[in-house]
Length: 243
Image (cartoon, rainbow, N blue to C red; front, side, top):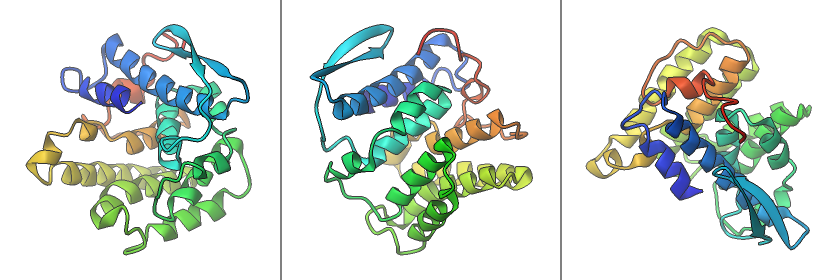
């Protein structure tokens, strides 16, 4: 999944608006790879069939693995939102939190309530607000030592803030928060030469996913940026081929 997502982000160099079918295909493959990772971990059978890059592939069951963790779950959730794949979001939200925690991966305390916030949103559960508050509190200054202050304030917090503006229906503040999120994203990924060369910063995946949710809900998303590929936001390629 990491390689597939990196390739999708690299596509934004020649195609920043995601106007080429090959760019859409790369984002879909990233989503499919991530979804397959969780399907293989969660299946009760010896194998599971998954569609990846236009082919059904039989993958052996893996059970819990270090990469089947909450951080990866959030990334696959974002990719599924960007690709507008409701079936994959449904399947992802059936993954039990216990499987994610069995990975042994260490994260800051915010991450579990944040993943449960997203799960509650998709499943229309009444506990969304409680989880969102816990996630926000977990991203307070000095509350996320593993991520560190730069990652927390410039990458993680802006996405949680965008989601809050989205679920409260604050159209005007959502756009202001989106501008702020992209500004902070740029600051983080251009802070030094090494980060500036890192393809992982070419697309703001979290803010893009939040913008896709807002766009689909009828929000007037007025922000334009290469960090926010226009044709991914506006679901130009959705339905072009089976995902």
